[in-house]
Length: 342
Ligand code: F6P
Picture 1 (cartoon, helix red, strand yellow):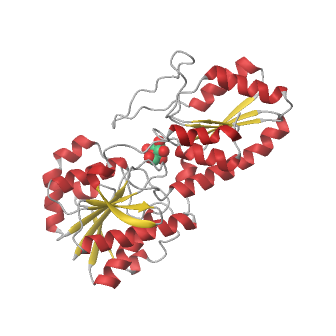
Picture 2 (tube, helix red, strand yellow):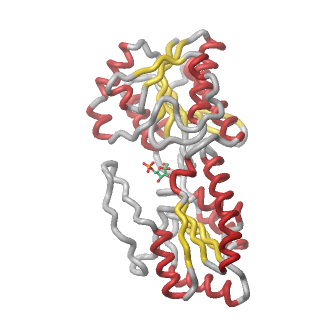
Picture 3 (cartoon, helix red, strand yellow):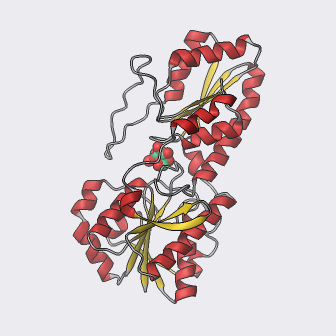
């Protein structure tokens, strides 16, 4: 068998561990071969490939990023290039395609699958917002990095009796904010799923200082927004993928808080540092297991599916179900922070 593999969307720690896992499992367990397509779907649209054997994946387990390169491709380009992609796959003798990616990549994988291409998807994203899997690799690493950064901000905030707002990634889902906030003892957690009440944030900040607390740490997901009419955020327009361009919610909320509380506020945007560097051991294991089980599924002819973590086991879920909706933070998970914030 010949497996084609690509990594799409924003990169995340653990992608290289999956590539290594697929290559090692395919070659050593099945005597199969693997070809890599470069820069996400561009590799298929423009026939850009790289051979992948055991030597090529040596040392990849611990390395962040993706050795195949990654990119976002607009859905219209994918629809228009469907026939080209099928021809390129046929020309390289690919029997099963294994795309590794988040919502956009898996939606494209579903499109190809519907068009008759045998596909086994692998979910990745630091955002942890893919439905059908308990976790995606990359998330644990991002939360660990954000937690360490917030731990550090506690001490400097304390020294200066300041409010520190930490903006973390999370366009539609606040999982990183929720977990890093709990892990690092944040006093406020603001997520995209629930518009925040600026008056309530002001109240919490004032109350903490008036009862003698030394500082306030707030974790703010980049996609968080205030209740309508309270504090309009600057409009950054939309990008070519239809995504709203963020204009820095932490910074803007910080200015409002400074004005209304008289306290010094600083905003720290963690940005892409959350996606860089080596994966945690948890993510290395999850990525390795995803790669292993995707390769087994490909050889068993179980296509049109995505590998998923369910409890402690790796299972297969239909791609159609996995991309039907995003997995966002539920009100009950958000309510769990209640005892530790404020
Ligand atoms: O989807 C992962 C993610 O890191 C989001 O959390 C973030 O909004 C986005 O990618 C950033 O994308 P880019 O790397 O294109 O700036």
